[in-house]
Image (tube, rainbow, N blue to C red; front, side, top):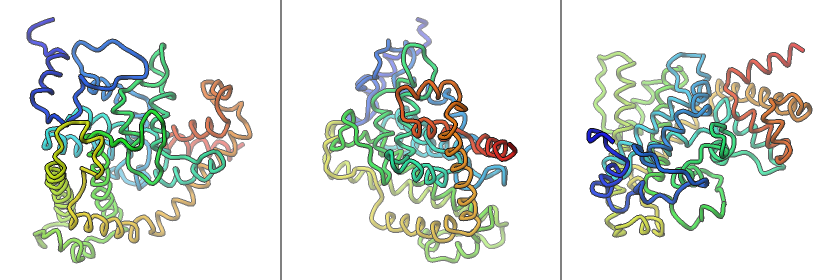
Amino acid sequence: MSQALRSREEIERYEREHLRPYAAHAAESRGRVYAQDEHPLRTAFQRDRDRIIHSAAFRRMEYKTQVFIPHERDHFRTRLTHTIEVAQISRTLARNLGLNEDLAEAVALVHDLGHTPFGHSGEDVLDELLRGVGGFNHNRQSLRVVDLLERRYDKFPGLNLSYEVREGIVKHETKVKIDLDEFPMKERPTLEASLVDIADEIAYNSHDIDDGLASGILHLEDLINSELTSRLELSIPADTDDDHRRYILVRALVDRVATDVLNETSRRLEEHQIETLDDVRSCPDKLVGYSESTGKLVKEFKHYLNSNLYQSPKLKQMSDWVEEVITTLFDYFVSNPDKLPERYRDMLSSEMLQIVVADYIAGMTDRYATQMVEQLHQR
């Protein structure tokens, strides 16, 4: 190997020497389900990141809704651009805390692979349709995507990602807890995975405000003059255009909250005398989080978005349309399993029909699902 190249061993040695001792070090990964030789130039977590980026499920996120249907306006976030923003915030937080940026990035990039078309509205519909067989949850589906549904290797199903990245999917904080023996619930995930949870929240709160203002559903003057914004202690000049005032507001929100997470997490690490990754995993309290005052502010911003954006007539109307699209597809393929693509028909020998149909629908883009329903209506 050329002396100019950094080998995997050299990168792993750099991690040992420069990352915090409680960071997740690639050389100490708990490994993969299917044993593979290590790559000579990339660590396990770098390899995971690359596999995720090159997956079909990752590419499809470009055409999946975040909050607004993307074709309504070119600048609205999609599920893919949301994921990229989460990855950026995660890397920044990890770098400043001396943690493993590669792992944080990989968990951020993978965390929404299992999302349905049409955002959370699509997920809610599939969850209701699958109520009798365990429901639907996008985190559980993301694990299913990387463990089973992606087909890129001939010797094993899925992407064969490392334990730590898969753990980040399973323990991503949502209302639905995933209970698997492989990932003990009593054991906390890595700090890198916990950072992704909070980076996800920072990203969607800020960009939903941005997209909500751009859509006209939210109103800039109302927000600037609100008590919420006054607590950010911003200086927003009145003599500049609305776009720049919006950008100032969104930047300030991201900076304020992310900086608070860094300071508060650092304080908690010191308070709990965290020295090793085992200390992280066994800690009885959350180590990554907001200070009390910022936590209240974030909660109030989420309440504001729920009342003024997510429950708005326009988005509620979209939810009704999404229910019709997803239900039409689900009913059609449950009644006509022979119309499923061959690879999904093959899965019926070992999987329930409803689960396989949900796998197929969850993998669709907004555009493909809409086109398919239009074709069904023309028959």
